[in-house]
Image 1: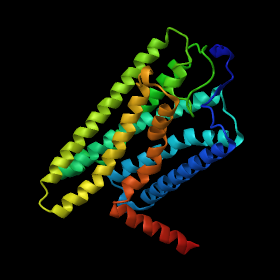
Image 2: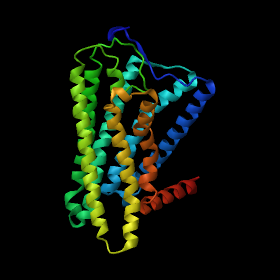
Image 3: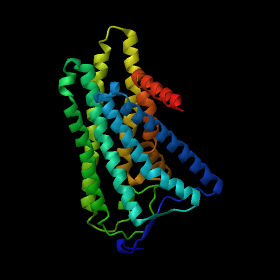
Image 4: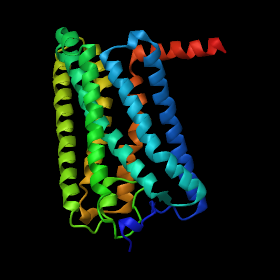
Length: 310
């Protein structure tokens, strides 16, 4: 037993039993991390360097790639370091920083995905008003609002959570410091304040999810009215993977924060956390660029230019 004033470090999720399994986890996390760095880095470089891609859709995609890079860089490197050194330690300050940035970046991504679904709704359902409703200034304001809301959420959660008395232990049942796991260490009755803040956050996530679903339903209804079967198929093939990844990201995040204690397990928690914190940053570059001919052409042009300079 310890209180928060005496805790100098936390212990993250125990590592697999054998050294071989630890190294296997390290290699798996390294492969996912490198894939996310490469994919999101290429998207950022391509959009930033090609003026033809300076449109609202690609502006929001650039923000998403930045968020994905930040999210996976907040959690995975420390886990890989622990796997490699066969340790579980993270300093108190390191845990606070990891906690803050994971909440900040993930919450910002929730709001940004809602904005991106609105962008696609306007583009498909109200194309004649697209430039009016989504001017450069409006896009910058929407993106800034998403980042500001994520920052405010992170500040409130971090201040509330780490002001609680932590006396259960210093062992965090997760591979990174997140809200539900830190709250489990608290013995303070004042954690009700953070609990209600968490409920408000989950409700906002759910509102984002509903907004995204409604936007995509309207998009699909508009697509069904397209006379060309080939165009309908092409649009569905583009947007269905988007919807699948967004649904996975939001639903697993919400469930992880509201998981009933009656079905709690380390394995389930680990799977959920991987699905909402590690998988999206790695697959988003593929989902959002694989069927995008403009982005593929610009990427090909960028890579060709790099090789010609060598």
